[in-house]
Image (tube, rainbow, N blue to C red; front, side, top):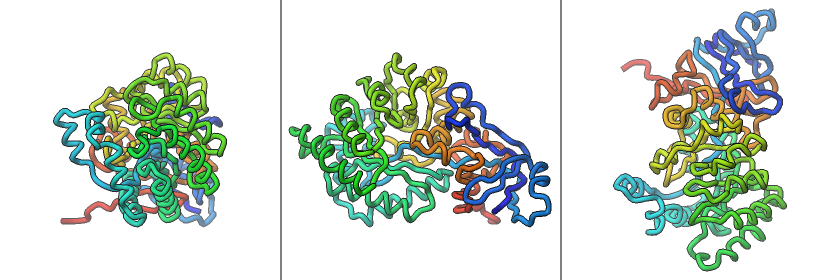
Length: 420
């Protein structure tokens, strides 16, 4: 048991019983000033430093001085493709010169370039490269992280990726959640046999993954050039039968009705939504599907930003995530995503923080465990090098995280240079 004291701002992001804060509630961060927090693995008590003196009394409890800095929940990055092999920096250069994502994919690049590299890589190689990216995410304040498969697109390689994700989950302090994304694209060997590939997913891989408990979620990329909404529905209904929770890459390039499908199948989240049908926006306020926005991808691909303001004002549960991947958004830093969300998506800093913590947790069905600092939830939090949470967006392009704690234990410090 530890009492953290001398906290300038304790940003609790407190939530109601539902574990969500839609609409204007996203701006209420539940800030306690000159705060203290009593923790073990989970949060035991929260209040002011003055109140802590009365609560603790003469009980000999170790204390930790937060040096007048701000404390807030660790970031929950609910959409990443962080396990992969290969490098696609050449594609980035081509896009800067004017080629589109679709043109590069048609020339053999895009997802398939990473599929070739990932199939050729060993499990050990995938593990060590992903470990470095995850540790970078941790240094920047991410304490819960979703990781998708989807760069194997055959039984052997998809399972290899999921085994790597499981190994990362067991060996690193970050809370890792696995998603099966065998429906990332149609592999070239099935180009003329789409139905047979979907049969492989629904009849073989999904049942095996469910029995082996290798994933919590099943995702589908539903968009032009990838999977139709009819195909996506077929795959996600099979996932539901086997106990995997649906997710969707929805309407990133074109409105194909994927957002509506996400709501219809009870998906945990619909992600991207750059071209969501305006008529569907209101539906997100009526159902529990989280609208997960990925501004880093729109930024990198030079696409229109997702309609954050419209979704928030409609009462949707809005999350933000990195979409860390080798092709369209090679960024594992949630602080950067907060900056993009405020500068380019029209979100307030408070809305962006709620979206990066509590609502990220909701997109992973973890909102009762992580995403806010409340009694009974895991003591997963970050200590900034600043007395104000506003520095996360204001002092952009830098790492404002000084310490990362997970389950009540300090797992990382970003030490500054003591002298030159």
